[in-house]
Every structure is written in C-alpha cells, then in structure tokens.
Length: 327
Image 1 (cartoon, rainbow, N blue to C red):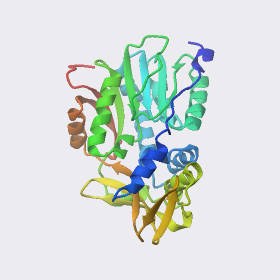
Image 2: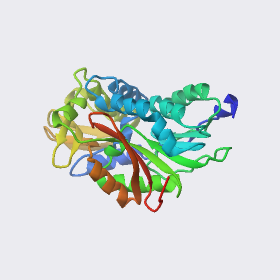
Image 3: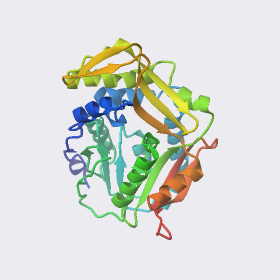
Image 4: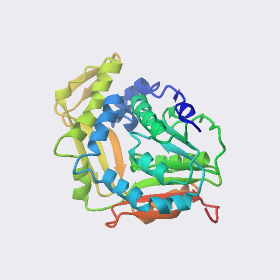
C-alpha cells in the first residue's frame, strides 16, 4: 500500500453533537458531573500531551517502557498481518512503537474524538509507515461506530487501548466497553489494553496533581470550553482542580470544585453552586491483576498474556475471547 493511499481522508462523525445536552443534564443532577471525554478539545488534547511529560505522571513513560522491552513478545502473540484498531489514539507515540514491532500489519484504524490530534498523528504515521493503510475515524469510540473498511484483508483485528483509559470508566461502563471491544475484534481477534495497577496511594495522587499545574489547567480548560461553545459565564477564578484518591473504590476522582457560592449560566440555564461543591469530571481506576481479569471475564474476555514493568506499576493485558483456546 503506497503512501498516497495511506493518506486517505479522515472520516468524521459529529463527536460533540451531544455536548450541550450532556453538560446541561450533568449540571442539573444532585451530584454534578460531566463526562470525561469532553476534556479533550484541541486545547485539552495539547495539555494532556504535556501531562504525559510531567515527572510525577508515571503511566505514560512506564507503558512506553513495556512496549519497547516487550514489543517482540507482543508481536509474536498477535501474529502477522493484523489490522490495528485503536480507541482514543492521541498523539500516536505508543502506536508508533506497536506498529514498528508488529509483523507486517496491513492497516491502522484510529478512532479519536479530537480532530486536530487525529489529523496530526495520522499524517506523521502515514509518512513513516507508507505500507500500512491508514483509515482514520474522528468519532467518540464509546458510541456505535461504522468503521471504514480496509482495502486489504487482515488475518485478525487487534484492538489497541493504551494509557489506562479504560480506568476512566466506572466498573459497569468499563465492562460494557470491553464487550464492545470483543465485538469489534471478532471471534479470532485480540485486544491490547493498558492497565494502571494498584500502588502507593501517594504516588498515584501525585500523578494527578503535578507541581507545574498542567493537570489543573487541563481540567479547568473544560470550563473555558463550555464558556466558548455554550455561551456560559463560568468565572475561571472561582473554581479549582481537585484530584483525590478514593482507597475504597481504588481510583482517583477528579472534580472541579467551586471556591464560593455562585450562580452560573450555561446555554441560557442557571445553575447554583454552593461553596465547596464539585463537578465530577473523571475517574482514574487502578486495578489488581486478578480484579482486571475478573472484569474482563464479565465481558466474555480472558487474559491471554500480560506484560508489566519490573516494579509492577503498570500492565499491558492481551485479551482474547473467553471461548478461544489459543491465539
């Protein structure tokens, strides 16, 4: 497949069509919340890439280290001529390592909600991997997708879901997403999923409260987006980022906390905030190996192989359908 064909146009849905409805509905509840996917507009995606470079944020560099050290083993387990379907591709740094390690992958199909991040990533990957067909889709991977068909048949589908993004979902929603993954990869397919493992809560909490304040800027950018796109009047100085570890639930819970009692107008609707009231914007769940395997089993999947860093802080889990005897 030549580079001209690899640079195919990006298919685009309307990933933000429900933005206003979700924000208004989320702010109307007794416990205010907004889905974490809306953190990733163009500015949010840029800030997230900066978060990954912060010294406190261990997940990215740890996962990259696993991909570098275990790439050959992953490629052997996946086999040749795979179609790589990636949920939430971001900048594509991890994708590059995976594509480089795999044996003659035929196509790469990233699904990413941020058009700017997707376009930049696909352009760079298409130039560096001219023999891999690029079939990008700008969409919300949590919604039903119509995936563009590749021109060459693949031996199997490999769903790639790095970064512990699965941890952004509550358990039941994570199980549902794993079930979608199982359907997308097909009976003989595989899924390579990044999983952040349980560790010292202080280390976990520090990763979401970096000293440079990049994560705080990322979280509060959501209010800037709502002001811009929904005609809201959030006072950006009236709210603060808060990320705390909940040991009972085994997860970071990120909120935008109101500094004082105030009223905000969004798309013509008024919302009152008490002093200290928060908007829940993200979960970041941390797993044990056993707990993750049990969750995958509920979605009809099992752990085929698992690779971790030497300190057991992070894992790449290769999943197959539960009824497949080998992969």
